[in-house]
Image 1 (spheres, each protein chain N blue to C red):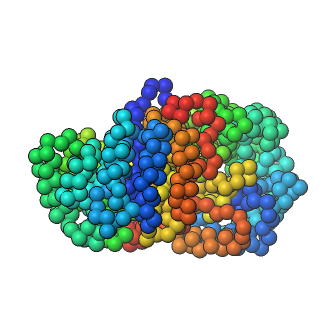
Image 2: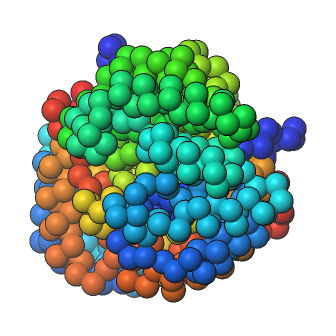
Length: 314
Length: 314
């Protein structure tokens, strides 16, 4: 129930053009991505992760990331994030003018070696080189360290919280401007989320900015609430709930942007998101990605009458 | 993450044989229901709502409720709930030996008149008559007042919290042993849940025992956590996530029993539920209800490796 005093707004950062498309084999044409970008912007999103500066041979579907970043940077008031796997990607992000570069670091050593062929500490060392490059370029681009598999890993199983916290501290020491924690494989529960975010916030303060949840096992919304209760005010999400793991067919993807619009509206927390525009975008996504599963919950039943009677943000 | 000190167990009360079947037009044979009942019991459920003493012409699919109640009462340690719409139903529940009779009262006047053809206060008056009948029969059967549409209503829209609280107080005054709050149509968000349960707990204390959520808009788990944080320790759920509203095709139903098993396991809260047995039951339900949609989340991806390494309850 909306409280009488306005609550601090939260930012939903849509990552459908990056985490969403990364998990889908097909290559969406650049022109379609530009419509997608416009659709997100028109729905009120002011933070977007729009691509990844990975080698095109590894992810041909993200080969036009520089074009998308440059187009996104033309949209007034939009903060544009791009993923960078290494220094080379960071140089490309700086050249394209991204506002935030997100360097992923997997807290699971097994996952890190399997996916990045680096240990987590190798990534911390690379972060130091990226910081030096950013500083010597005199760029205002922010460096975000995104700690993935922070709540467990399909390869390794348990990821110890103390190791996650060690990597948060190491990343900040190495020059990250901010840090995010990601439940890459949908293992987290709300108590675990609260506990790890509480501990990480004690360590990183306001430099821990973002929570990134997948709804793989149905706890996406509950985990968002837990991180919000801990004090987090930026949440990654994907329009249409895309971003499912290609290794888990049928499993849900990232928490859906439209579901977070509804969740926060139900809590009286402003997001600036326009629900109807998100539903319209979802319909277009279903066409652009015909044959790919969309996920999320609110699209089935629509907003409650109790919210339709008032602005979505109220 | 499980804490080091054991947490108070919670009870999941499966209501698939009542709220689940009530929303499905087909009539499941009594023998199948008895297998279903056994499956729930074998999965560790010790609280079940197994039917409704409504006139068979209104709900032929629940016409064998007395038989199911009597069979359920044979299972050691099982607390058996049956819904009763009125005094006549209560007399049948007492005759069948139910341990709890659940009298629904819709806090939405519009919903109450449309569904029950009674005002909420008419139901409070009927509750007084049921209490008198129970007491004069010398029965230990507990009377639970289930306040539905407590978080909003598809007909009326907003349901004022103060009206819900008035009805909680009136119900306790009229002789209810306990009270539950239900989000019948999936309108609630976690802040609203916390706020209303906090207020109702201040009023009713430990006589407010139960939260009943539908996952219609994807916030079922988040709402369970919110009610748990408020202090509630009994949660209604349906195996297979059945219990969808027949007026909202495709919309999810009650929170899934297996999803709550996973949610509470992730929190280190004991439920006594056996996850594998619930998944096995889900498979049998899919056969018994072929053509009906099942819902829920955890069945797609299964438990995380982090939980498979330890007992489900730990």
